[in-house]
Image 1 (cartoon, rainbow over the protein chains, first blue to last red):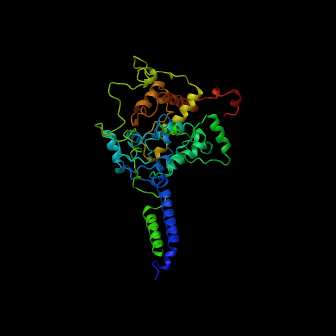
Image 2 (cartoon, each protein chain N blue to C red):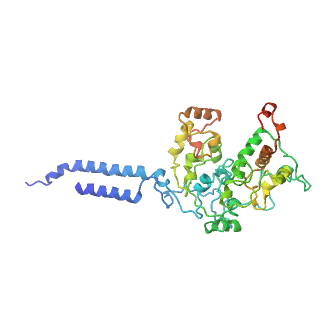
Image 3 (cartoon, each protein chain N blue to C red):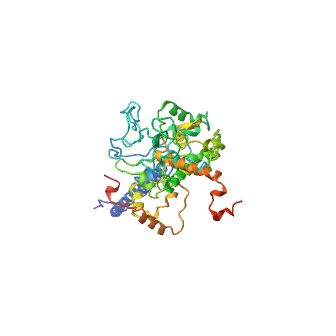
Length: 215
Length: 203
């Protein structure tokens, strides 16, 4: 009687198991790597309607973030400046430059410049800018070195693990109040002790329960 | 098995080539699958909104109304002008304290320094880039202004300077006035203003 199954089929169960493990492993890795805001959000760098450079304004000229984002200390959101703020200087500087045509149009008509929002938390997250910047959390912690960017790029993931990392250990991120808008500030060696003192003195209680950010 | 491995490797390589790695710069907006909770039917400030004719979520104040908590009265503290007159208030109508001065210094650095310079002499960084005439705050004309007039200039601007009323809160404007006065004092002080023990050191 000839064999019904050829000899190699003896190895079939092992091959199926190994194959499934390899394919499953690859799929798991792929999902873990790609289905995360670390992949989906970071790197987003849209083309803006005006080629505004933070590097020129914040770094080269040394403008404070709050010259334009003047609501950040009082409000839960950091406002995009109106065209009139641009025109404080650009009514004289680069007065007829074609790159600023959109700004002048907005200033003249009152229609907003259609800036493309880059950092966009889910609607079920209630992030408050003022409470962070007023307690020693710098812009750079979430937005990266914006003052070095010609075009703003989504630098950090802003996913939930990203928030929790700091909420659980604020002393590792907190800095002196007067350095919050100094995006070039370097954390000195052994600053954690001072950080702990800030957390204690300023009554920083970030918490990591759901209702801190979700309600 | 061999074919399976080849297909698996090629699929992985294709995914890697198409999707790239984390943090790669991209012009394409982030993909949001099942976004019904991520983007709810509600509006956030400064976002487009089809409901209103002007297409905005953040609406301006309706004409003839005031918003809650806004400082709308024509008091001297809000306008820099004595109520019922056209005269500017002579002296800052809020208590000038060390904290007000510190606040003024900070706010001056944020909003005024780019043009007027850290010393208030009109040599800010913007001068290099084509900013025309910027007032020197040590100019006798400005030193002699009433506090209320400086306040009003910050609020509404003057000549080529735009108004900063929308950008700087009222208390902060008075703080800046106090700081400008302090800056002016740095160039007007005489030896007699110095404490005894330092006078000998001064030339």
